[in-house]
Length: 265
Image 1 (spheres, rainbow, N blue to C red):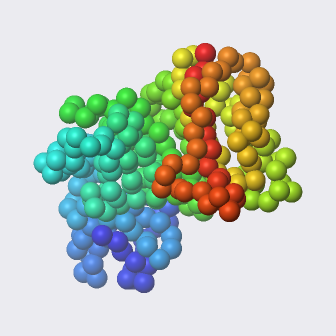
Image 2: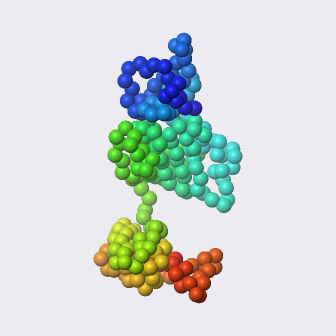
Image 3: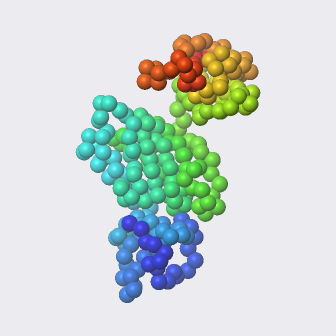
C-alpha cells in the first residue's frame, strides 16, 4: 500500500511531510488516503475508502490488530508475553511498529505521519479494554533519521514502570589492551547511571563482553560505580560463560563473557 513518486502525475498544493493527502486517478476519481513524504515512497496508504483519519480511525485499526492476535492465539501463548502488536503495513498501519513486553508497549514511528500521532496512539494503547498496557515507550530515535527535520529523544509517552530490574549488556567497550582504561571508565559511568536509577530493593544484571577486561577489572569498575552512586550493593551471583560457550584452555582469550547480579539497597 504505497504510492511511488514516479507514479504521481501532479501534486496540488504543497503538502508537508507527514500530512494526510488524498490520491486520485487520472480522471479525478478518489483512490486512497495516506501520509505524504518526499522521496521514492511518496504516500503510505492508510485507507482506500473516503474515511476521516482521526482518533476513531486509529482506535479501530489498533483494536483490529489486537483481535487478530487474540484469534490466532498470540495473546495467550504460555511460553511468552512478548510479541509484536502492530506490524506496520501488515496491520494496515504503515509507518508504525508497536512491540509489547508484558504490559509495556514500545512504539517506533517509521514515518513523520505516524510520529506526529504518537501521543494519540499512546492514549489509545493505554485505553485498550482487553489488553492492559501500563506504559508506552517511544523508541523512534533511530527510525526517524533525516525525516522532516525531526530531532527526537526516546522516552516514555505514557506511564512509567518502576525501575526495579535493570539489565546492562553493552557491546564490547575494549577490543585492544591500549583502550582498557577508557573501557573501564565507560563501564563505570554506565553502571553509575543504572545504580542511581534503580529503585531500592531492585536487581541489576550487568555484563561485559570485552575480552581484555578481565573478571577482576570488571568487578572493580562496578565497585567504583556503586561507591560513586552512594548506594549499598550486594553481589547475589557472579556469572561467566555457560557450556555453549566453551573456553579452550590453550586459548584463554576465548573467555570473554562475565557478569554480576546485584541487589541494590
